[in-house]
Each structure stands twice: as C-alpha cells, then as structure tokens.
Amino acid sequence: MTFGMHPRRWNVSIFDLYSLAAENHPTRMTAELMQIFLPNVNLEISVDAADHAEAKRLLDILKVMIYLNGVQPTITPFATSHSLNDYAGINSRSSSQLCEKLPEGMRSGITAKDSRVEGWPNELVFSVLRGNSELYSNEIDADAFTQATEAVTVWRKIETQYGKASILRAALAKAPLMPDRSSSILHIWQALETVFGKGPELSFRMSITLAELCGPVASRAETYAKAKKSYHDRSRITHGKVDFADDEQWVRAWDLLVEAIRAILHREAIPSEDDLFSDLLSR
Image 1 (cartoon, one colour):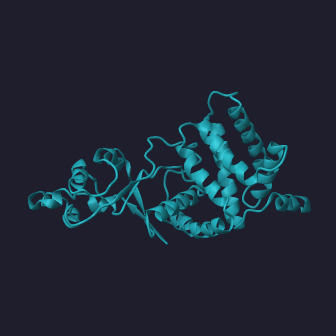
Image 2: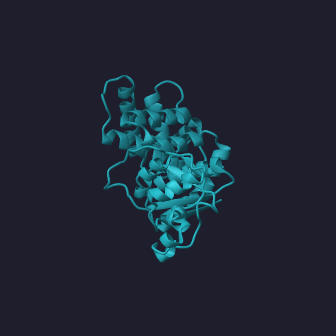
Image 3: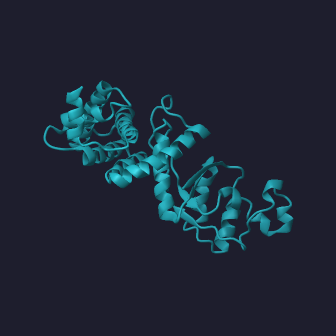
C-alpha cells in the first residue's frame, strides 16, 4: 500500500479530453464533465491498489486521516489510471506540428493511440460543507500527509478487528458531501448512535460515553458539553423544530465525530460502553 501526493504541473485542455473520447478511452465520464472539475484541481493523490474498489476504500480512509489533522473537507471528484500531468497535452502530442508548440516538459509522454486512460466517477458534487476557515487549514504539507498515511495502516487494523469502525470512517468521509447541514448532522449522529448508542436516556449515556472515549485526546468536560448540545441539535432537527442548521451546529457535530475517530485511533480499539463506564468509575 503506497500513497503519493502530486501537485498539478500542467493544464488539461478540453481537446485533450476529446482526444481520449475519440480513441474510446474508458473514462466513464464525458469530457465536458471532467473539464468542470479539472481546472480546480491543485493536488493529486496516487494510490497503489489491486483494483479501483480497493483504491477507493484506501482513499476514503486516507482522507479521514487527513481530516484528523485539522484539514478542511474536500472532494475527490473522480479517479484516473494516469495522472492528469500525463494526459495533459495528449491532443497536441498526436501532431508533430502541435507538439513543438507545447512547453518542453509536455512534449514527451503518452498519446491517445498508444495508451489507455481509464476513469471512474467518485464524488461528482459541486459543494462541500466546511468549518470556520480560521480553525481549519486549506493546505496539507508533506509531514501531515506522511502522518496520515501512517495512520491508515493503524486504522485498517482497527476496521479488521472492529467492523463498526468503518461506519464512523464512512460517516466522516461523506458528511461534508451531504446536501445541507441538517442532513449532515443527522448522518453523523446516525453513525455515532449505531456504534455507541445503547439503552434509555440516550442523550446522557451517549454524552458520557463519548466524553470518556475521547478522554485521551480531548477534554472530557468539553466533549461532554459538546455532545449534549449536538444531541439536542440532532433531536430538534429530527422532530422538525428547526428549519435548517447553522455553521456552529454543523461544526459541533463534525468535531465530535473527528474526536471520536481520533480517540479510537489513539486507543487502537473501540471500547464497549461497559469498559468506558468502568474506566470512568475507577478514576
């Protein structure tokens, strides 16, 4: 399992994408749709995997591990078998006359006739829910990326041992892609309740459980208060008492899920409610 982080070096023109379509490259998307997203791509992530399904799963885990470092949610609209830096200029490289007009670094490379660029749609959305820009970063450096890739290995072991860990991971990956904040908050709480919900007095029990779970990575008192408020938000949304959730409510739920996953990563386990209550009473 190997990940790579690659900055965009070249622009892909619509004619490059038309060349792929003309030669029947299996991109599974129209050239026009790909061109909507490509101009806004600043960074590519490469994943070595046996097939697309495995690559998609690994990428989801990696994105979640990146989010744990305080990076803003983002989208990965599609995947391709080749870097965009490889198929940038592919149209001009089919003609010696046009090829000479390309920047020197683009003149050699794959052509539409001698290659097979495969594509898969992934997150074809046009908006993403985000938190306060002062609290989250829009950038990721090499050290943070390396830390995230190392965390992927640990998290995969956790998912192997605790099947419900994948529910939390999937919720964090997909919550920013929901159509509105209210739906996203319900999505987050559905995951938390599936993993930690148990018995009556759910608001109190969930808040205590999450506070104790997150104790090694966050203030128990602050987590308890955050969970109580967020569960109240969830209940009001569920019962139609609010028309829409605001940024503060969404960030509260998002941070709670981030802290829960960070705590599980730290513990390398999902302790049961009984274990957490036992730890609480023994302190």
